[in-house]
Amino acid sequence: MEKQSCTRDKTISSILSFYTLLTQLPYIPPDKLMLPPATGWDTSTEESEHDSPGIKATELRKRGKTESVIDVLRHLPYLDQEYWGERWTLADNTLHINYARGQLYADFLERDSAILPLPGHIIWLTEGFERAGYYLLLNTETWEIIEYTLLGESIEIDYDAYEALPVSQKWTAYSAMPANQYFELWWWRHATLQFVLVSDEGAFRGTAQFWCKDPRYLYEESFVQGEDADEEEGDGDEDEDYVPEDEGEEDEGSNMDTDDSDDESAEEDEEMEDIQQELRSLSLDQPIPTSTPSALETEADTTPKCRKSFLHKLAQTLVPNHNNRNNPRANFTDPWNTGQREKMKQLVTIFVSHGWPVPEYEWRVSGRYITTDPQSWDLDLSAFRREECLEALRQWSNDRKERERAEREAAAATEKAQQKSKVTSVARKLQRWFLIPTQNGQEIDESVIPYAVLALVELDELEPVPYEIILETRIHKILQGIADSAPMKEREDYREICDKASQFLKSWEYIINHLDADTRE
Image (cartoon, rainbow, N blue to C red; front, side, top):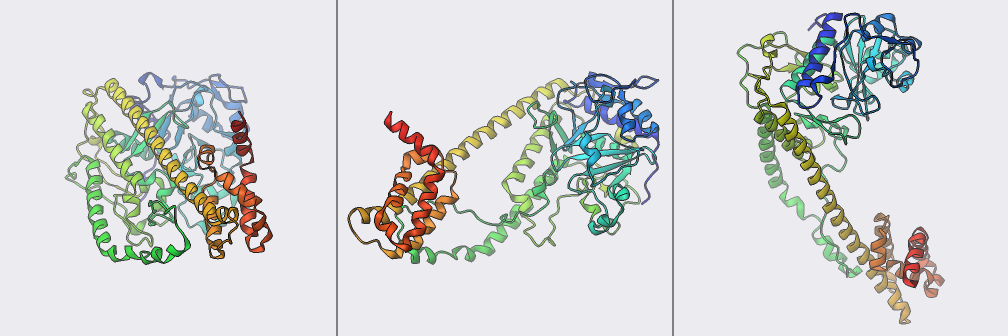
């Protein structure tokens, strides 16, 4: 399918349409939309970025930008905001650049060897942040949007072919789309509540939290199957009075879980069906349009690299890839993704309950191209109660943060309790195996030596051990007794245990000194 040509006027119009929608949503205030005067925004001779209005034409020329680029920037709409505040969030990890207020793209981008050098007719419209951020570049010769990512996810050719490109041509390997189609696609995603921005002044970067209909594509861990995704964590408490003789009993149940694998697989299949149904409900159960967009791309027309692009990912339905050598269900059934889906459903409910119009249907998107019924772009917001919706979203966001804070505190308390239990168990073992025999003048059972080493390894894995746990368990006293034990020092086979005890005491020296000071007081 050939890309439809775009023009300067179409580009400006589509950006204006997109920014207008963002101010109609309960996020950016409507009075923040900045429209250029007929003669364009003023220019400034200032070379550094600071709080002064006007396009920094002199600095842009120093960075190699053409007069055509500067002229386009003078006639673009922008979203106003406090200069020293965080920038508006437009989509996933994508921040607005207000050139009319004197802002510039970060100078480090001039040194990014992955995509530079850029021709002078290409300009950054947005900045990303974090590794998943999307940087949008406008090509003022072809009027295309180039989608750049730090991780190279939008590279559309094989990586070896990309590496073989001359440095001056690397930018051509990234996903590109006519600017009007690109911003129309983002307009459509926001209008149909597949993208949702929730105002959040406490956001790490930007001014909103970004939510997406398909949460698999929000973060990097969603792309790569975790090494421990299918591992089951044991949460049983360890027997504090374990002795080497119990080893056989522990081995007897080591393979018990294999007997139930068939039942677990059936349960996973059933759970997968439930989740698929839940995800389909996020489309608001709209009917399929009476006519189908023509000339859609097929899977064969889309290269593997292209299928990794942001635009393509957001166009796909949630069907597990059974060709994945890893568990295809893991990305659907893990608690984080399940929670994200539930939160997205709550957000959609808030919008619709406050009068946000439900679209008659959602046209299907193929690859990086979208074909729609022009009439479907009409958005009647006469019944939308924007301020009430904004307040409801703020309350939802505050409640979510409070719940997550409580969950973190509960998880931290549980982790601390488990850590204390394990440290107490190690302390009792070491005391029973070494200190009590040496204090009573008895021989140490040599069979416990390898288990003592394992106990110290287990203690090492718990590092750093909190001050309170060391104080409550008094494990430092037990380790000090082992390190100072003359009978143990005299035995070569006990050397490793004594040395390890000394290492712990050294790493806890600051804590132990405070404990001793508190005791003296």
